Length: 409
Image (cartoon, rainbow, N blue to C red; front, side, top):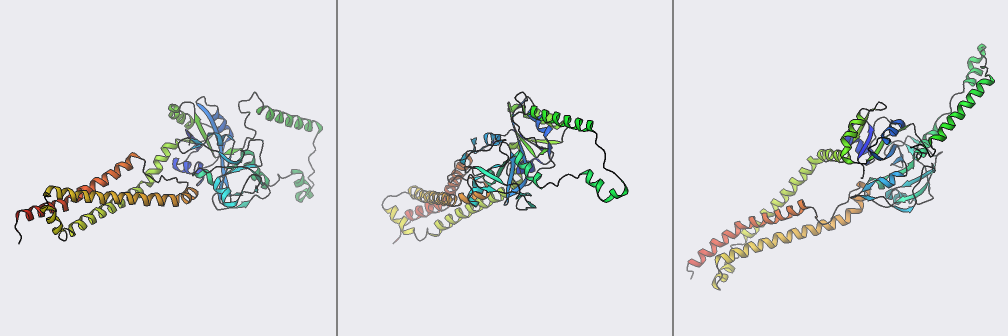
């Protein structure tokens, strides 16, 4: 993924990984924008990408982020994200969105299409934000990962979704004029100097906001500063400092956060699913053992029927050792043929199921075993087949030796 740390509200590491990388579930309460700036300003941090979650588009997760997401995210051994159509958005395009390959393929989207999102994670949609539409500017190339099933918007666009539905603030003067106003309460008098103070205060606020995005501010690339975000992707200048960064973030006073190392969280995830994996491995070994047992039974059952064949071989000069070798060679060919047929069926099954697995689960399978452990497993099965063939081979050796020493009329 190219990510050294995932900073999120304090919680379970696997849950944070599933929510922020795979788009499954949610993190805890949001992080303040000040926390993001503190993380960004750490000297060991090379780059950081804010993440917002909580909306969906027709069941697909909507991610609020910046254009840096498309530059920093990596998959399949360090490959960067690429656009199949259009271009990525930037912070100056609050109504722009980029969609994953699966989203575009399922709904026929392309650059220029207008979409609306809804509040809620997963397929649960609580409020359709049809008054805050987005225009697709780009479609990502297929990756075989969860990115294909995501819709990306800018931070400003993500906040605009919810601001569009927010009720207008109550006016205190309306309260004074209606209802209890009949008690004789009059609207408060506003002096001219108060207007001046408010105006100068507003101008100061606008000035500070403009300066915050000026060329002299270290955060000038952030055109929009949301009140809260859900997570931060972090890349470090030196990966050996990751544990020190974790300790530093654990002592933050702005928010209680968890700094998750993706590789460690993935290992924990695999340990959770390891029981099912071991059950499948045991089942595979049981099938292999049943196959070897069947081969031994088949060879042993044909020995009596082939006794005449072995006698003819002895009569033309074949030794018991040669016949023993023939039985072992026959078993080796059977095992090799079984392995070859199994690999061919595996390649066919992977080829047929690859599009479905990539689209629905983000899984990419290799049709041919390339891992050293898988190759060693094939060698072990072949060797076990040869060992199993020794049972009928020894029986043939004794049979042909007895036939050679006895006289038959």
